[in-house]
Image (tube, rainbow over all chains, first blue to last red; front, top):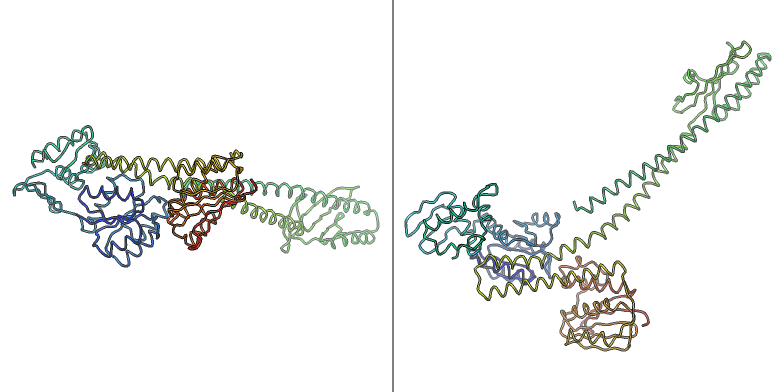
Amino acid sequence: MADILIIEDDKKINELIRRTLSMTGHQGLTAFSGREALLVLEKKRIDLVLLDIGLPDMDGFSLMRRLAEDYAGIPVICVTARDEVPDRVKGLMGGAEDYIVKPFAMEELLARVQVVLRRFHKEQNIYRIRDVEVNLAAGTVMKGGRTVELTNREFALLKVLLVNKNIALSRERLLDLAWGMDYYGDDRTVDVHIRRLRKKLGLEEDIKTIFRYGYRLEM
Amino acid sequence: MQVWKKNFLITYGMFLLVIYGGLLLLDSYISRNELAQWVEHAQNDEKSLFYLAAGLKEEELSRMSMNLNAAAKDYRESGTLVRVWINTYAAVDDLPEELAGERAVEIKQYNGESYLIIREVREADEDRIEVSFAKNMTAFSDAQRRRLIIFCTAGLLFSAGLGFLLYMTMRRVNRPVNQIAHELRTPLTGIRGYAEYLMMGKLTEEDRFFAARQIVDSAKNLESITEKLLIMGNVREGSLQVQRIEVKRLLDELKEQYPGIETESQIDYLKGDRTLVKCLLKNLTANALSAGPHVRVTVEKNFICVWNDGEVMDEKLLRAVNKGQEFSEIAGSRAGKHGYGIQVCREITLAHGWRLRYTSSEEEGTKAVCRFGQP
């Protein structure tokens, strides 16, 4: 999984992002100022930077320019309270891959992180759950060395659960992510597909039902 | 574009319409009246000439012509051209053919100048008298044009001045709203994020407690920001209740809240709004404590001083806080997270007619000095 540097001066938010990223298997490294961030970057190879624009010691935009000069190739996502169009434009034109405005939903942050990692080919493609091996890039699922045939929808649902592992996803969210925003399906559609996935892959214990909410893949 | 800017443009556009519409109406009303008077004047002149011609028609032709020419000369000198025909005899004829009109009153252009043409044909004792009178309007038109230019320039200056004031006022009214939205986002992110974390994640009891604690802290932060904003709102509306405040009691309450601080007082009472002065001292002390562990609050005859031995404030930051910049402008600096506190202190001192100034040096530490009048 990816090593993600979180540059955010608010300790609570920094810790929240770190915990959420680590739930999905990423390693979150924290920095509370621009200087601290540069020290971390010198010592460690980073796959993605989550950058708050309002830092105590330097402007986030200047730090982004510095990153572009000295650490080209590390994608940056701006995570900030500044929601005005000029700030968004400045951030995106300054080299940010994405721009997230506070307050944001954690699912949204994770989804955007995933998209940027995929764009930079840093996304994890192979997942293992006990004897099940899923290759997202190849679109194959093996169980105990044997190929398991999944329908497109089942595979899409499995992929959403894997990418958001250890996170509870509501049935509506699963419908949105696996079936698409324009799908007007029933919540029971999700239940039926989850049941099939559990049966085909033997993941009865791993895909947990969250009462009156949805499902969580625990790994 | 921000909503307030759109509102400003709409208001300003309507304002321009009203201003220029009003000015143009006024100008057109004045011009119409002036033109009516001017035409009436010209008609009177033409009538005089007509009666002169009617009175002279019995005289010998050469004598009549001489008298009419003498009158025409005076008109010519004032830029008016005349033609007097009695039957088929041209007694006076200064009028070029281009200005010969058919209608009783009309305006014509000749050699780049405007002329008002008045033509009158009457029968008098079996004679036919025709008087044509062309009065040069150029000076009159120029005067009207000059007035229109003056009106437009005055309108432009007035609308520019008023537009600037309107823009600054709308910006001042709307900026705090943006800042409030901006500042509330951080604690809101904490509350929403940790609530989602509690709901979505597979957590231990310790994690749950941690997340719940973060939510409580963020909510407290939100409450504190809201409280300060309300105080600022009250101060700005001018709801100030000036009373005698017992300094010792005030400092004791402060010490109760911040036990580590030193307090000293040279006076027994000071005059001000008790709630606001308490809030001022609380904010100054909280800011001082966040900079360094040793804080001393001194109340003297003419000032309150809050001293700390923490990190020295850099020149840029010192200038910013002394200039009274809005908290968003000092955000991102060391004062950023205390921006609201600084802003609240500034608002409170201004409301009391006091003056707040920060100084900071290695030798003397950092001081926030609030100067006021005699208690």
